[in-house]
Image (cartoon, rainbow, N blue to C red; front, side, top):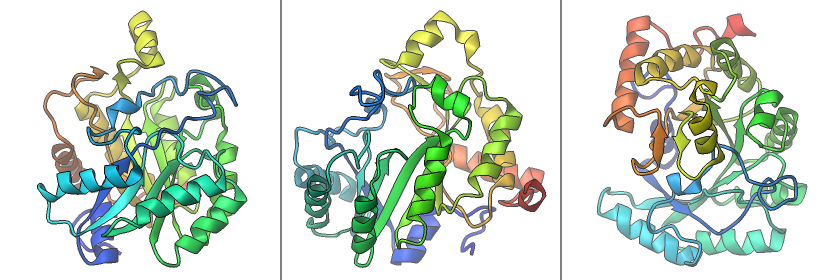
Length: 312
């Protein structure tokens, strides 16, 4: 149910409806790795990845979870009037350990005053049945969200970017998590190499068939100290990067193909200027992009799900 005038389900409205007030996420880095980094499945990690692009200054694995949360709360309390917080296990793969270790970390986060839940970023091939059962139990008392990096619904793309998992892995684990009492999130990167506009729009149709609650989107960015940075330097024509205008026009079409009940958490990701190689959109901020998307949706008379039935 839409509780704002927007033409899509937006995450901030969902959070306010759920908690009755604004809730701030506090990012954590607990120093985990990924199976495509440590040799379990591959080496080098995802070709687009540099986790420094989204770790705030207070977020250092050398600090305890409690320290990171307390410093994050102190930082955001000066900017916003939030009284409740979600511990966001963000960097790398945050279920990539044994259950006892995960319990200790998650429960340390939940012990911090005013932390009302967890948001856990992970891969679809790194969540065991026992972790699912444990999170289902936690969800009886706390808000729990498990976010899967799907990135693309095309296996050939996943292979290109060295994800070392398939889209079938995503479908299988998300089905396992269905009706467990916690929220299921998905993440897609829009504009990975070789994907046409038709293929990108098809992501919306395919992802809509999964029992996810939330979806994060962002355009492909080339960042320093990533494998893609080297690829881009050698062959920039290999990439078809969006302009800001092109992305806004595309994403409004994408919204039209999405299942109407999916909550859209994000449209873009802001990479620090010192790390961003391309595309450079000037000084446009996240909220400005969102405002332009809202305006474009109205101009084109598109709303979330407008094309959904036709696409199935």
